[in-house]
Amino acid sequence: MPSASNPSAARRPDRRPARSSQAARCTGHRPARPQINFSCLKLFGADDHTTLVAAVKAAGLVGTLEGKGPFTVFAPTDEAFAALPKGTVETLLKPENKATLTKVLTCHVVAADAMAKTVAKMIKADGGAHDIKTVGGCVIKARENMGKITLTDENGDVAHVTIADVKQSNGVIHVVDKVLLPKM
Image (cartoon, rainbow, N blue to C red; front, side):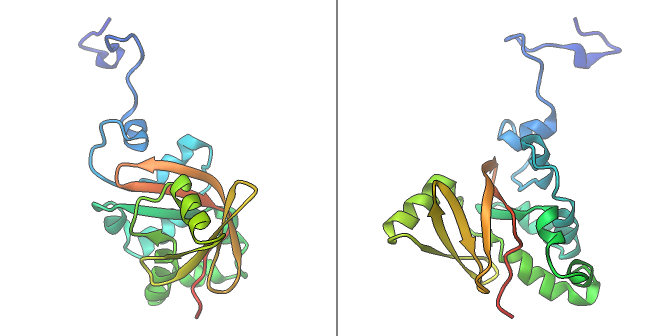
């Protein structure tokens, strides 16, 4: 029973405990405001996106990704960033490299709400490969292989979608195992 000293003890009429505000934002229930919330990935078993979050902050893209959208974000894991040549992440995070960092990150963002099923349909309709134009001007080639979506960047490197369809109030996140790089 709720009390003045413990208002969180209240239970909803359906007898289930209330969801935390973070869980509510992540699952689309009662979102505080539209946003892509990278911390939501922790709720879905992919808690290794600290490098991505730091990079988004360093590039000044938090406000953009919290905007109206819709957005699809291909979110590389910390392991994907660690696989880049030694010193790459540190160099990109320097203030003087903000433009390059922004280009790399926006090559992971599409101005659409593209669930995996929708991407798979586009791949099939295009004969096995579909070009996706990103906010950063990159073209990523999407393919489907044994029910899994792969993304090939402009350099020919292939990323696999490891977790699909992490729905957000302003789009969707797909976790990928490689950083997609623009041709430079």
